[in-house]
Image (tube, rainbow, N blue to C red; front, side, top):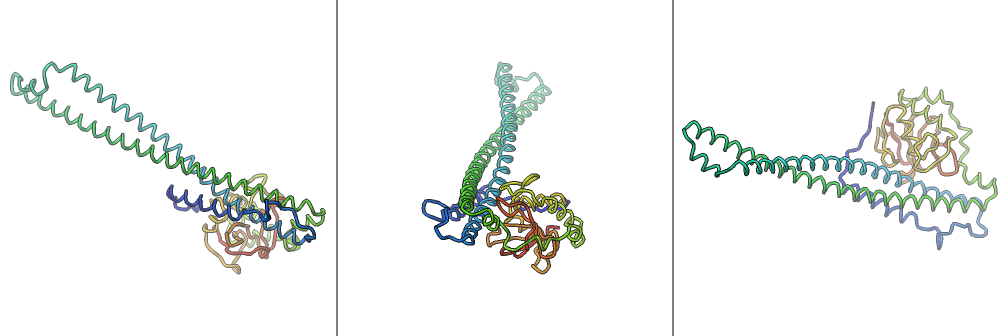
Amino acid sequence: MAQHRKRPRSVAQRTVSLRTAAATLTLAGAPLAAGGAAVAAPGTTAAEVRQQVDELHHEAEEATEAYNAAKETAGRAEEHLDRLRDQAARRTDELNALRRDLGAQAAAEYRAAGLPASLQLALAADPDEYLERAAALDRAGSRRADAVAVLGNELLAVERLKAEAEEESDVLADARSAAAEHRETIERRLAEAEELLAGLTAQERAAALAEPADAATGAVPLAAAQDASPSARAAAAVAFAYAQLGKPYGWGATGPDAFDCSGLTQAAWRTAGVSLPRTSYSQVSAGTRVSRDQLAPGDLVFYYSGVSHVGIYVGDGQIIHAARSGTPVRMAPVDSMPLVAATRPA
């Protein structure tokens, strides 16, 4: 099974990344009009409304990918925190057991010692007894010293685990906070877009949510797309994408009933045995880069300067993608959006 994994980042790096993403989305999510209202001005044409709706949906998608990243970070942090707490609990139990053992040894020696150990040794009746007692005393002292050293090491280990758990807890809190902020941005932008669309006729609304070009005329048959795929895995990913056509868009969704853009591509390649990262701007680093003229079915195509959208190429200049809220998973021309990169996962 081919897998693509990025090297784990430190706690500090993950925290900075989350805060940077949150700041970026805060700026991107500034209201388009005073007071945040998204009502079209009098005399605004349907084409102008469409442009505003497109901008709102694009901002919502940027926030969606940031939300996905924050949720992914929160999930990893929560799992790591649970492991750290389990380790700390086990080491604490070991520490307490060592303390009890040392306490029991000290109590036994105290009860047994009518005379100091050194004096008992000096009063030994014969040389053999003397040597036996000396060796036993030396072993007891060595064992005690070793036990104390182990106890000290266990104490330090527990303290380190507790400190790391506290730091990971901060990462988890930051990730959850960032996810909540992105969620608010998504919901606000989608509500603004819906408010603009509400002022259109049914025909104008359909036109505003349509692809920039008619994708239906360029539909690629599944068999042709699979035949042109560069590998069996790519063919499997393409077949999965075709099977999702018509399913609704859902921000943060990875299937099986709804998808966002990166959720669809991740799920498609998962069926082919390839593990992709969760977000579009992480997926762009997975696999081999290909140029526009090298595209083959199964390749991932990425759009916009922030790599905030991704689709799966199916051949003949077409992609399948989860476009945006209010529209189903569908085909579209590969050049219907500003293409910035393409990769071949396997």
